[in-house]
Amino acid sequence: MRLFAAVLPPAGAAVELGLAVDHLRTLPGADELRWTARAGWHFTLAFLGEVDDTLLPGIKEHLGLAAARHEAFPLRIDSGGHFGQRALWAGASGGLDPMRRLAERTDAAARRAGVPMEEHRAYRAHLTLARSRTGETDLRPYVEALGGFEGAGWTAGELALVRSNLPVVGVRGEESRYETVAAWALGR
Image (tube, rainbow, N blue to C red):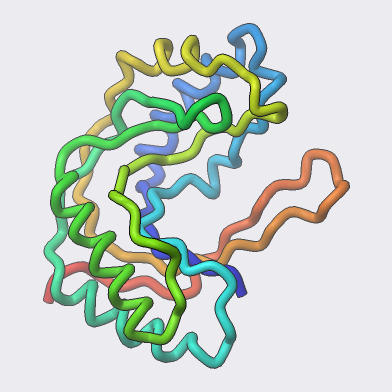
């Protein structure tokens, strides 16, 4: 199964962001982007990739311990950015240092559970909104439109282990589907 650890925004934060994304989808060229489904919006902490089912109990145990050792932190969805010409994302503000530490702890927990993690990269909190269909879309107008966005704050108090079900290849409009496998409250 394909897994990742994440912080999931509460429904109210997703509704606020959804209104901003509705505006983005009216901008010229928006049809050149594959927009992510709102139900799947998340801040990935660690991507575990394709994991053998036999590792799942250990992953749950180690992620549960990581969550228990980490306090809840303030968070909000804030403005946006892009990765080259391929992905548009919304950013975060608030407890970015605690979120980065939680990302490091989830990465370490997955390694302890026997998951061969990718090379470690500096963590950048982002919530993917859209991907370019061609890899040649100028995403700057969308980032500029998101520049003034600042959602209401909330307390990020949960670590989620999420299963990613990839879309069926060749089926137009098919999107990834996400299923929360387990979740743990942050802190003792």
